[in-house]
Length: 327
Image 1 (cartoon, rainbow, N blue to C red):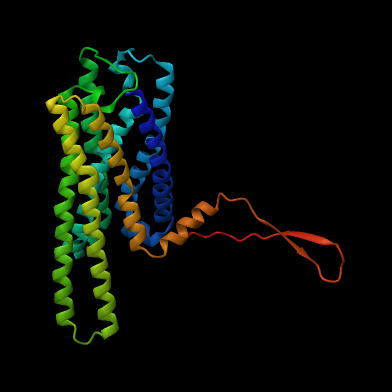
Image 2: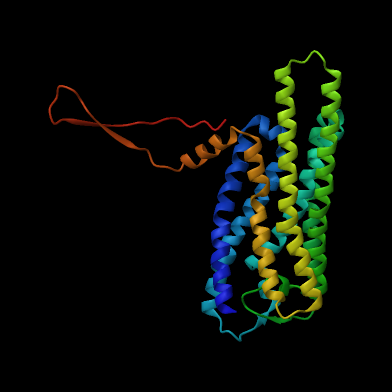
């Protein structure tokens, strides 16, 4: 078991680092670009939560490696000490990720189904969605933590497995809430695709004066969006929802390998944190260049040496500085 936890801790670090970098860079680009910020602010905060999930993965992998060397194999601690552990932070962020998928799907649904109302009251709708995204998960976690604090302490492993921090019933509620929120996002996104398909047919049929090139471009964009939406839903189902359901079944049945199932569900859910960011990068063709510029800001300036003609053996070094504008 220790060897397995050691390997999984390394996997957490490996999966968490690119997730943190990609999601945070995408979030920075969206926030700095006025157009992206106006129309994709909900997606930006969902991507931010995914980036924080990647950061928590790195912290979890490092702390578990430290805990394995610090504590004995048979040593136990009170579950209270795990409330501030990276495992519990990851439980909170996973709950935020589930509700983030739902908020993102609702945002796209309102924009497609009620475009006039959406663009008229966009600020209010975004505030409501973002408030719901954070208030409900934090309320669930606050109640869960309060229940654990007022309950008698339980002795658990010092590596603080997330599903052992809380009682079985409490953690099952947390798991069900985030799974239900993520599951609801799938039919909503499918409804978005259906609505867009019907509107596409109506627009093409009613606009006879539109040029062939414009129609082809419009159809290509709609088809591209439908394909990416279906891919996103499939990834969410197989990497986030299905492993969570499997974990819930093993927890409720108290199977001998419930700890392993919880760790595997955690890793697959972490891979799903790439979902929204990569879909957004794929949809916005020019955003990849801006993301590269975000990383280039941390590169040192390059020195280029050139030989001045006519002056033998004399070399002049000059520094080329190019201003970076990610707008």
